[in-house]
Amino acid sequence: MVRRVTLWKVAAALFTLGNLAGALYAAVLREPEHAGVHVVLTLLGAYWMWRLAARTAPQEMRSVSPADERIEQLQQSVDAVALEVERVGEAQRFSDKLQKERAEQRRPGP
Image (cartoon, rainbow, N blue to C red; front, side, top):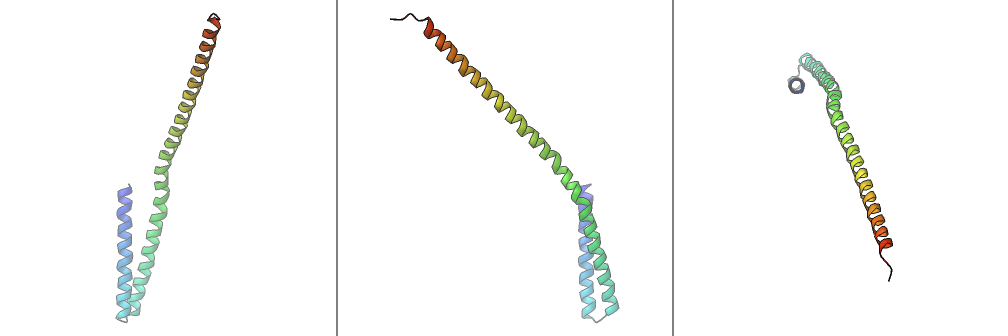
């Protein structure tokens, strides 16, 4: 679908530029009616390009949006894993501290 729209954009651009060149050529030859036809066709080509650009812009934005959502979800998952790792580390430090205190209490004094 994107390839087809791109081809239409190229066709519209070529049409517009060709008619712009035709208008300039007709103006140099002092043919006002001929130049006027090319000016009208140039404006139609510009309108056609504008319509194609407006039509394809939301589709491009939609294709980017799911990727952004996935990246955001991945970031949230990584943050959640980091938080859990920190909790496990804190629990391990607390457990080691308790074991050390109990071992010191069990030692007979000098």
